[in-house]
Length: 126
Image (cartoon, rainbow, N blue to C red; front, side, top):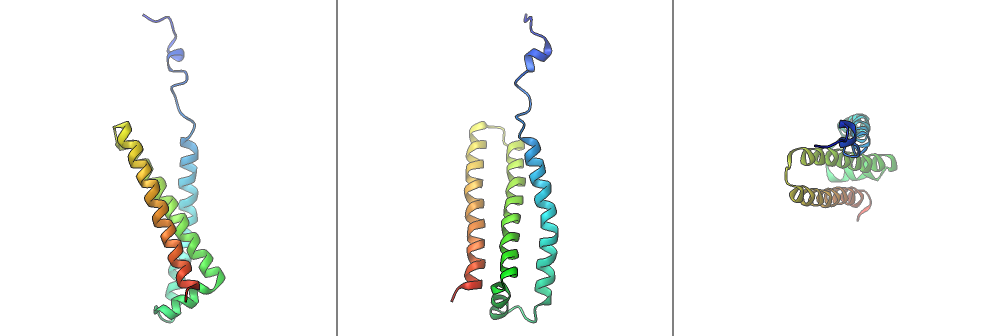
């Protein structure tokens, strides 16, 4: 039998104070994706053709290149936040959870970096 109160038993075992930041990051990135995705769709539809030369000229324009890189970065980050939420909620084993989160972080950095590199290569490559 313990003489500690119910509050004393759970003190220090509650929230890690990280959920609010994660929740806000998901919402802010989702809101940022709305105008970026609309810009991307309407910009592509406004192009006279979708051949390599036209898209290259479009991406070489500084604002278009910047917004395309920003779209990929925000989209990758938003996807990463959602995926780690799923892993944290549904992977029961602590070891497997840590391993999966490490692999996911590596893959998202790799895919995001490769995507940004591809955009810059098309825009400024020879």
